[in-house]
Amino acid sequence: MDVIVCVKHVPETAEAEIKIDSTGKAVEKIGLVFDINESDDYALEEAIRIKEKLGGTVTALTVGSGDADSTLRKCLARGADQAIRLTDVKFNGSDSYATAKILHSAIKGLSFDLILTGALASDDGYTMVGPILAELLGIPHATMVKNIEFSDDVVKVNRELEGGVEEIVEVKLPVALSVQTGINEPRYVSILGIKKAMRKEIKVLGLVDIDLSENDVGEAGSWIVIEKMFVPPVEKQTEFIKGTPEEVAAKIAEIIKSRGLM
Image (cartoon, rainbow, N blue to C red; front, side, top):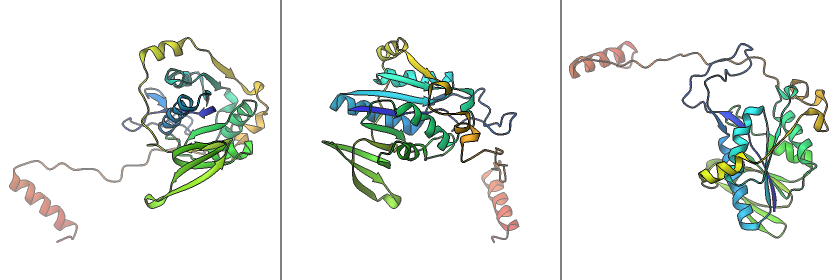
């Protein structure tokens, strides 16, 4: 079973102070910690488990700058056999469609039975790369996958729907699946795995190496173009009331009364 897993190198913003850079179209990256996209982490773990159970290979791909090598090294340390980074300044500004085209151009020449992606990109909130990539490759796909089972050339998957409902579908290989978080428990990277990963080559491809033109990538090849980004203004603030219990109670009563609630 030859598996390709598409991963993304993203900033961890849950507890960070976000600032917009000088272009007004992107987040200021200085000071932010980057790591593998959360749902891609689960997709990677699932790919490794499939290889351990059925044999075959795992290839990790990403579209990004040289900084993304740390995420690819993590993939190699966890058990991926090879890693490919698609890098070119002309890729900047690519939306999900353009990104899927870039991945497609690299993947179409590779041997694969299964493509795994994360269901959601945590930095931009997009969920479209997996399905668009499958359509470009002309293979079936399923999203929000929570369980995968194989039987000959058929894959049975459980899909998470709204309201806690699950849908079970069967699709034939080759197939692209967008994996939901919680499908497994990603393993820790061992020290030995890290040492081995540092000795492995990361193949780097640019625009000249894939079957695309400048008009196919970046903003020119995108459906969605970011015009402006901004941090939402603070409309409400928390007020901490200090004093004795009586003083605090009196202040709370005064606030409630001033707002016409009593």
